[in-house]
Image 1: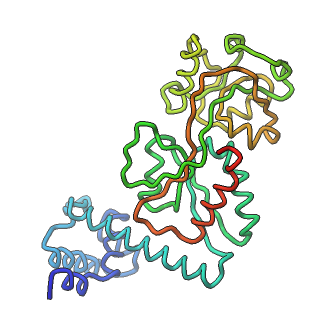
Image 2: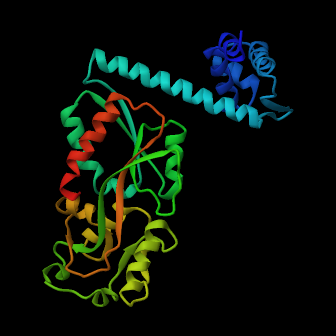
Image 3: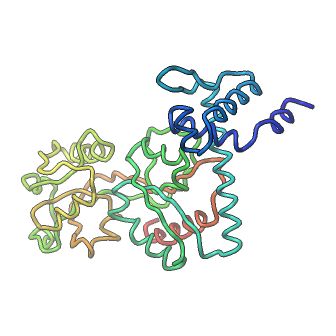
Length: 311
C-alpha cells in the first residue's frame, strides 16, 4: 500500500473538521465545547493526525495552540476539501430545483453605488427564490481575502493595476472613465461646457488621496495641470459622496457606471468637463481551480448581459 492510500484510509473528513474547529476556537478545550465532544477526543484526533503525517501540526502552550507551517498547509487543504463538497451539494440542489439556493458575492462600496443594484435586481427577477448574500469587500488587494477564505463565491470589483495575484481568474466586464458630476438641479448641470479649473473653488467630496481611487483622481487633476483640490468631505464611500452631491452643495468625481446606472435614482448629472482618459476596469473575480456553483455561473452570465451596454 503506497503513502497516498495509507493517508486516504487514515485521514477522515471528521479529522479535518476537528482541525478546523481547533484553529477557529484557538484551543482544544474550546473546540471540544464547540463540537459537543470531550477534550480527550479532540486531543487524540490531533495527535493521530500528527502521527499519521509524521509532522507537528500545532505548537502547544498554556495560552492555547498555534498552527505550525505543516498545520497551515493541512488547514488550507481541508478548507478546499470542504468548499468543494459544499459546491458539490449546491450542484445537486440545483439539479433538484434550479431556481433555489444561496449565492454569496463580495463587492467594494463603489460597486454598490453603480452596477450592483441593477445587477442584483435583474438576477433576482430571473431567479426570485435565490437567497443572495452581498458582503462588503475592501478596495485593493484586501478584497481577495473573502475569496481565499471561501466566504464568497465571487467578487465584482477591480484588480489593482500592480496586482500579480496568480491564484485569481479575472473576467473584465467593462472599462470606464471618471466623470465630474453635480446635482441635477445645480447651476453647473445647465452648462454645456465646463473647464475643470472652474470647479476648483467648489466644495468637493472625494476619497483620500492616498487610497487606490484617490491616487487615480489626484492623477487626473495633475494631468490637467491642476493641484488636487482641498476636499470638504473625505470619504471612501461612493454612496456617501453621491448622496452629498445630490444635495446640490458638493461636486465630485466618480466612475461613469455610477451615473449610467444610478443618475436618476441619486439625482445626479454628469458634467461636460473634459478629463484625461483614465480608465478603470470592472471585473468578475474568482479563484482558479475552484468549482463554481451553478448559481454563480448564472450570476456571471447575468453580469455580462447587464453590463453589455458599457462594454
